[in-house]
Length: 348
Image (cartoon, rainbow, N blue to C red; front, side):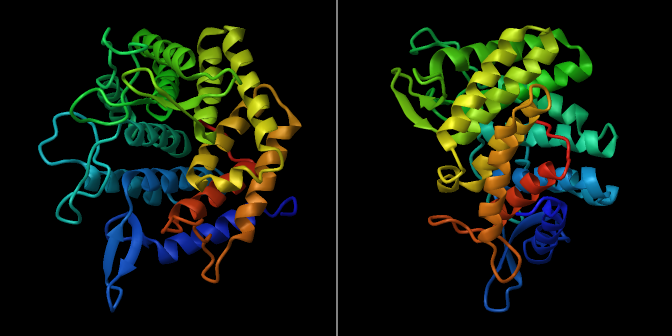
């Protein structure tokens, strides 16, 4: 990808998303199905958050209309379970447009972070209270049970029993709590961010300095090293450095960044991960780059954007990787990474 083409590519792919994967009647993303392609199969909450994040990144550069951004807030209501007394959202669209689904703490953390990005782009208070209520919901997943190996940590999803505690259900919550602390000065949010960060670092950091995927109640660690878990711990470290002035957090973030960049090299290994994971990783890597620059961060993001661009299909969308079905996440990932390379603020 040639320098200076990033914004053009981001706009082109976003227009393809709007044309093929966006239902303006509901504000949701998905794909048409049926003989006449009149029925929509709507995307789950996590891909929705990825598309929203991409829209915010693009909007920070070229003035996407405020009404289009506000439509994202309205569309969230299609994921809200009937009768829910907290802010937690379903993983799938609820009735009458869908059948709902389980509630995952990581899904809701991505939405909380997207709400924060939306507020910064639109310079409006919309969504601020909802983001704070989401933090309260996410904190309810904390498991302070002495019978668990490494007591603490936020479980992956609601359900019977403690289940696994995942990096993806903890580090982005630390990011969200720290972000809201920096906006509000609420000391309880800083305490929560510190506690989650410390637990994730103690329970999931491997001997190689990167973060494992999850820990079971009996202490068994699933050692898969996924890019987005490195990214969210990098972002949480930068935010906690901003919140406290403690250089240790920034040093941690830098070590994780340099170790992970060394692992991913020219981006070939990143290409084997789902694009939604990689967009989160690169967003946080470039966030660190704005505080403690290193040319290898942008070089890796540029290489990966080139990989996605080469995976484009005839309709302007990015073809999903093997084992995936929808082009929404990889297409949104290309929009976001290209927007970041073109100068969009790298918010966690």
